[in-house]
Length: 217
Image (cartoon, rainbow, N blue to C red):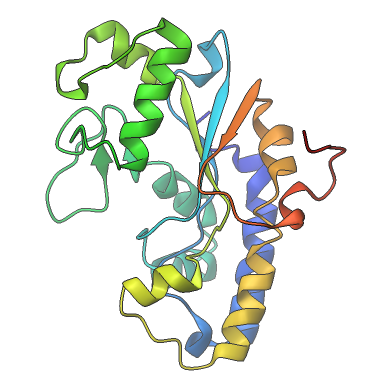
């Protein structure tokens, strides 16, 4: 179940309808991020979701909107779940990246490096792993991971790093407000039933917990 299309399709469709109403001057460069799982997530003895801050690059927003206008949003959800994979093609000049091939950079500051090492520690009790020397058993464990974000479209500060200018800030903020309906941890829980959600790069946002009973410890 790379993407739970039955659950997320209505949410993404509602977002795209709002984007059409606001107009193209409000669009960010990249499309909506939808939480998804790797291929063996359902087989995992402990189902773990790793949640980052935002995408820092994704499928183009215009491509998502074209799929919406063509009535093919399910295709977008499939493309969404292929951007980062474990066994993916990771060919140059594409939007696909493989954790097993060139993206396996063993960079200790990388989001994916940290997630893979933490996952291998939790599941296989491995410490000080070099991601360039993983075994088949390691990759089978990594294929049980799942991936989410706190921001389903890029954070303002990320857009600044990308050198992107939004021509109509007011409309873009409305679009961001609409996107935050999809950022809820409740959706991950209802769609994928994880045993554990690990949130990285936290920011103070109570709306992420909307619809849940929770307490801080």
